[in-house]
Amino acid sequence: GESVGLHLPTLSVQEGDNSIINCAYSNSASDYFIWYKQESGKGPQFIIDIRSNMDKRQGQRVTVLLNKTVKHLSLQIAATQPGDSAVYFCAENSGGSNYKLTFGKGTLLTVNP
Amino acid sequence: NAGVTQTPKFQVLKTGQSMTLQCAQDMNHNSMYWYRQDPGMGLRLIYYSASEGTTDKGEVPNGYNVSRLNKREFSLRLESAAPSQTSVYFCASGSTGGRSPLHFGNGTRLTVT
Image (cartoon, rainbow over all chains, first blue to last red; front, side, top):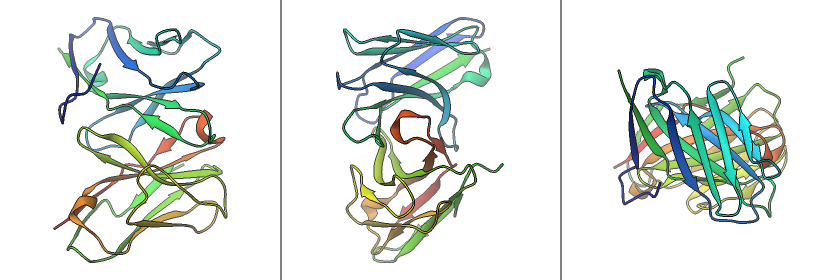
């Protein structure tokens, strides 16, 4: 989703539903992407990553999909739980320097019991 | 393993005061990073160190200096704090630069009055 001013895009789901969080990236040369979860008062926590030579990668209850044609990344969380409530960020390595990750502004996921 | 440890957790400074934020990692990572996080802006890279003995500017380096003291420690210094530097500061480390997950500390919450 797109960030507007100081307000994060939000997604509200019911416990047990599947969640899909979207991210548009800017650089067609980016070759590495990561999803992070950030709970209130804590640092970002790594969830899953994917390289540009892949379209899909699965982890435990999470799947990342990469569509390079439209420069779009998504994170799917299966059977969402209240503990999944957090802000989710995507990040990309934009090429050039090997050491820089550029972060999106985040999406707030709220899971209702 | 403690992972990435940041000190202090909270700090209040007056305009013009100086301070150093400390960061240490115990994962034997080569690269270390300092980010700041502001509402609506996501995480922005201040400085990074690709390996012991090297440092480079990120997206928002003005008003900051860094020191890579050894492989474990990477400090961030504010020489003359300004209200615009009120933010949450995160240190991170990674094993193979920008194409592997970064591991973050839990942040330093800095207020400059």
